[in-house]
Structures are given as structure tokens and as C-alpha cells.
Length: 97
Image: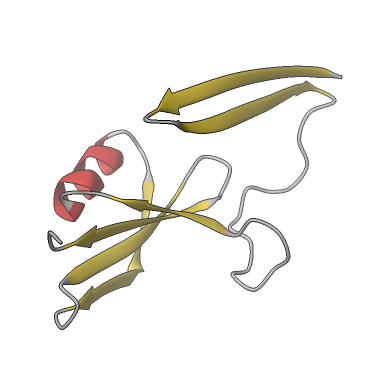
């Protein structure tokens, strides 16, 4: 097996990114069902949802526009994007607490 790992660290949080060079990967890169076992999505808070969407789209990210929600009562907006592997990432903007 040949594996490359990169660790992103910030404010005590560590995210591990893995790339399997050998034996390679399996799957077709489509998003997993939300009720599937295991990881189905990550959720990240962003300060400006529109700016985040624009920045990600300019870099080739796929925004799942039909998932956009706006809850005026909670002062929250959210949308899902997918990474190159098809993992859903939920971007959430909430009013300042």
C-alpha cells in the first residue's frame, strides 16, 4: 500500500487528508446517501455564505443549489457543495451570537 497523508492544523483542530496511490481508490465519486452508515457529510460555519460559494465555484467546486436553505427565524442560511471525491460539505452562515 502507498498512502500520502496531509494534516491541516488550526486552533487545536486537526483534519487528516488521505490519498491512496496504491492500490488506488474505489467508488465513483458520487455523494453517499445522507442516511448511509459512516461519514455522509461535514458541516462548516462560514462568515459569508455568498462569498464562500463564489470562491469555491471559481475553483471548480460543485454547489448543490437545490440544497440551499434560508431560515429567517434562526438567521441562518446553508448549502451543500461536494469535494472532488463526492463528499458533501455543508456550509452554514448564522447571525452573530
